[in-house]
Image (tube, rainbow over all chains, first blue to last red; front, side, top):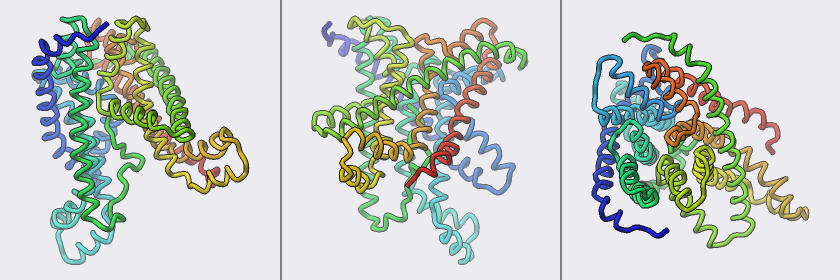
Length: 238
Length: 220
């Protein structure tokens, strides 16, 4: 069988509309998930068990279950409690919740990587808790965690494909529709595979150039700990 | 509607059956992918060739750059078109194997880099055959240092199995969909499946510590 190029032309716009929705969903999940991840990371480090305990439960529950069942559960639980949201919104929320658990672990690892002496000297200078975090810890953490945070975002792009199972019209869903109309699965799926691939490679290239700049500026690499230590998987999903 | 836990309990026997299929699929896929990745790692290091290196690089980049769901669809829907008719289960296991293989390749590459060069030189100096060098000296060390990422990879495989429900493989996710489409109590049933997934993944991820301790004394 040969390639039918007319499919690329005829159904390209449909696929591209899905591509655009995929980007919007991931951005939405990033905007909600990242602050939530920061909050969870701090809650998990807290000495108050009332804060720590729910954060641990949330993070472990979301990290140790498949994203697909989380999506389904959220999709059916919300109406159960009378909250009816469109599928797109449910998708963004589910992706944000899923992503935040992984973001939290990356941020926590980043904070833990700051040498104890930094905390000690900051407190010795008479800074308050909030000042220590804002002026000493977070600026140092940020440079360490940006690459793994980028990697997590990259895997959110891939996980967003699963939202097609709850009828969100993102890229994978549009490909399924094109396949249903044309009966040409290869053209439909290779088209979106290439688009996902290009998008991810673009994000990855940005991350790599950022990392190169980081290592160029910083002569002391001993400060940047390996973040791919066990327990902090670099990739959230497939 | 009220939450009624009896629906979860009623569904439990069938959910457990589904969980068994899930575990089987994950185990088969993971074993195949580790075997395949090990062979490829040995091959790329024993007989370095530009062709293989480029091929593997492209393969890893493609697998890591596209969603597994799309890879599953590509295999499940496209293979029959070119005349290869395999069932959903085989297609699903094939997709998971290929997907996981790319990640295991990267893990083994890292593990191999951690083996000191002196080990290889010593093995060669002892006159071991190439096969014995890999079998007795290099691979055991690679696998022991790679235990944590490999266990993590297995949980990733386990967590990717529900995707096979989309191509009608009757595993835990599909079973729960079948049950709640009949009794209209999705929350109770899905919560049961959710718990089972959590128990499986959490147990496996904690096994890493156990395995590491088990193999620690053997480390040089």
